[in-house]
Amino acid sequence: MNNRRDTMLPMEQETMELLVIGYAIVMGIAVVFVSLLWIKERKEVYASAFGWMLAHFLVFTAAVACCLTAIGSRHEQQAMASEANSLWLGAGGVLWAAAMLCLLAAVSAFTARKMDSPN
Image 1: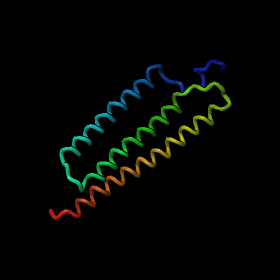
Image 2: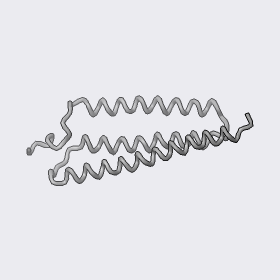
Image 3: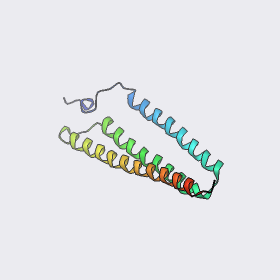
Image 4: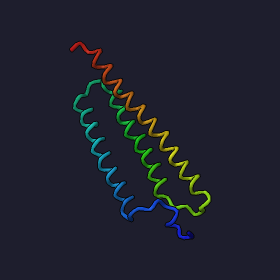
């Protein structure tokens, strides 16, 4: 049990790298897609909604980073491993909740603008 590798969640060596790369690709596509829609629309009424969407992506990325840190970290002291992982997972959960609130704010902003428009 003295091996530092024993404190990490057992998984294939490439798994963390693939998770990070896969997440970056998917999130990059989402950010580019939303940004292009924002540029295409160029309507002031949608500015806050698109801003909330981008805030959702940013906060959600921080949440994912916390969770990946928890499952991929190697701790020097075995006694503190569960506390550190719990802290990272808790922070990730709080950030995930904040990201979901940003997403709900974006949806609300989009639908409120749609209801207010005369078309």
